[in-house]
Structure formats: C-alpha cells, structure tokens
Length: 357
Image 1 (cartoon, rainbow, N blue to C red):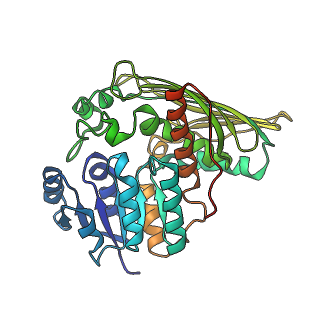
Image 2 (cartoon, rainbow, N blue to C red):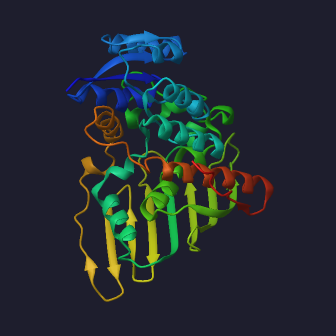
C-alpha cells in the first residue's frame, strides 16, 4: 500500500498536540507538508517536524503533488474557505469542528465532497468511542422505539480561552509546540462566538449523530458574563421527527473542576443515559431489562487520534467514503447558526429545509 501523504493547514495547539502526532504514528501515512500564515507558528512546527515541507499559504500546500489529504486545524471562520479549496484541489479533507459557521457553506462542502468522491471528515472525536457507537446502534435500530425527548448538558473549563488568556491552560494541556493564540477563541470574527461554536458543538453533534435526526426549530438565550463571546447558552428545540429537546452549556468551570457532559435520550420503549467525559452508558428498557456496558477506560474516553486515522483509512482506500460522513456536523451548524440568531432576536428560529444535494 502506498503511504498516504498528509498536509496540515494550521500549526497551532490542536494540530501539534494531536493531529500531527496521529499522522506520524500511523504506518500508512507520512507527513508531507505544513502551512500556516503565522510565520512564528510555522517555524516552531517546522523545527519539530523537519521532515515536512513548509508553506506560508494553504494554496501552495494544496499544489504540492505529494499531498493526498489535508487536515485543517485553524480558527472557525476559515474552515469553509480552506476545506472548499482542498476539495476543489482533489484532496481528502479532515476539518476541525465546527464544519463551518454558515449552513449554506456546510452544504456546499458536502456537495463538493460527494461530487468528487472525496472524504469530508469533521473532528467530532466522541463518535469514535464504543459507547457512543452502541447508543447510535440502539436508537437507529428502533430498539428504543420512537425518540420523544432529548436533554443534554455540557459544562467545561474554557473561560480563560474566551478571555484571551490561553496560556493559563498550559499546566493542564502542556502545549507541546504552541498553544492557542490569544484571539483564537476570544475574537468573534475568528471564532464566530464562544461556548456555542467551541463547546456546544460536541453536545449537539452527538445528539444528531446518535439519533440520525436534525433540528426543526431552536429558541436560545445566551450570556457572555462580560466576555467578548458567549459563555453560557440555554436552548430548547424541536427535532425532525417531532420530538422535543433541551440543551445547555457553560464554559465557566475552573481547571481541575470535574466537567459534566451528559445526554439523555427518551424513547417510547426506554431511555439511554450517556456521559461523554466520564465514559458511561446506561440503557433501560420499559420491559424491565437493562443493558450493562463496561465504562470506557481513561484512554478510550477521548480518542483524539481517531479522526486522522479515519481520514487515512479513507484516503488509502481501506474504507469507503461514508455516505453520511458530515450529516451530523451539518445539522450542528444549522442548529448553532439558528441558536445565535434566536439569542440575538429573542425569537424562535426555524431551520430551513436542506437543499437537494
């Protein structure tokens, strides 16, 4: 098998801590190129990963014939342009979440990928745990009956990111090359917003991925607590099968405090309690039976290397391009774009019908 050549666009925290090491650890891939407009970040990454060519713009990387697939780990507002250009250049793509900040752009990326037969993988890592996969299997098989209500909570420790003080997390994450820039998450022109686009993405994407549903309407309230972006978000919504839902998220926890990331799915034949960050899943059926599932190990809870592995498997031809690979990511963009509009307007927002692809 020919080694898959990987190019990485964006050489900040997430790329250097997770994505690039994932490429280097994969025997079926090789790191061929790096690109970043920030010369300091690019230089630091180039010193660490000297085997890769370096470019100060993404189009030069995309023109490199040794690159078969690209990993995009840049601020949210750049995801659409970079992923679009990569797909048009014939490259398989892994783009960090969120897929984009605009629903029409998200659907355009899916269209480009489908038309070209290319992978469009989105960095929603929690999909790859065995408990999340089991929850999806149960619900999509109909074993839980018709979904009637979903409730989610996502509490995390990100206030200093939104305050423009990312260095305060170095003791937690031990940034190996460079940490996030001060404005990566605090500048809404780059991030699109705060807790919604940065953290609530994990929660709502899991809901859409596990249930196979999308959102019909959203009502949201958001508080910035004096920060330049939202810190606390509260939403109620309807799903495409008529079910109701609630989802809340806060980034106000402090480093070292226990995080809570849970989802409850209620169907006509039972319910599922899913805890993402603590790695548990409880399944209870109305006939009195329960399904016992072993908790995830600490290594299994957040399998950070699996999105890159999925990209490489597809690019190498080992696994086919998934037909629904980006659907939950698109549903997440739809939800969040409407949530932000609702918070600004004070009114419920209806999610437009998806275009024909």
